[in-house]
Image (cartoon, rainbow, N blue to C red; front, side, top):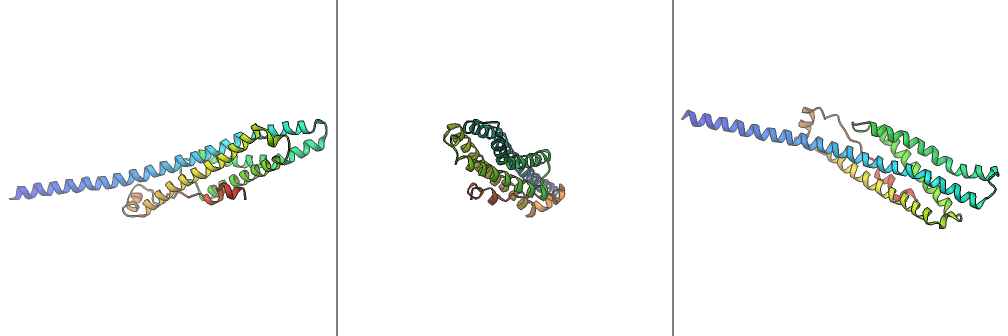
Length: 215
């Protein structure tokens, strides 16, 4: 009689041990994958922002070329200074976000709130400066009617949409991680693997809406 009870006890211990292992391992694996997905989505956001920076030299070259056609007297300092004055704010904003993107890409851990806010402010500022510059050029001939300028304008528009989309993906993964970590048994698993203090801050997607940037 004792042997069946012993066998049942051993079986129960092994069975519940397997269940407990599956819960712990599954919970940790879920948190780990969510953290990695948020990190990957973060890199997708910064990659699109870098593409925006990479298009700026092309835009500046178009503006200078169009102005040289409109104003053949390149020795006129007023024309040259005016052209540069329209591009200087974009250059300054680009330099700022370039530094922040480098900081973001160098960090493997979830971003600090300060860096998130700095990114939001700087990226939105750059996008608005680019939009303002393009709007000014759309009022001028011959640049506004060239196919190259029209195509470049579309590329900037598409990047705004793509950045907005990837920010939503990043926020989705951040929210999933933060929610799972706060719920049972997630908070126990997070504490076990020292993840209880890890928090993935979301971006304010509302700031990056293309229609809001262009309002």
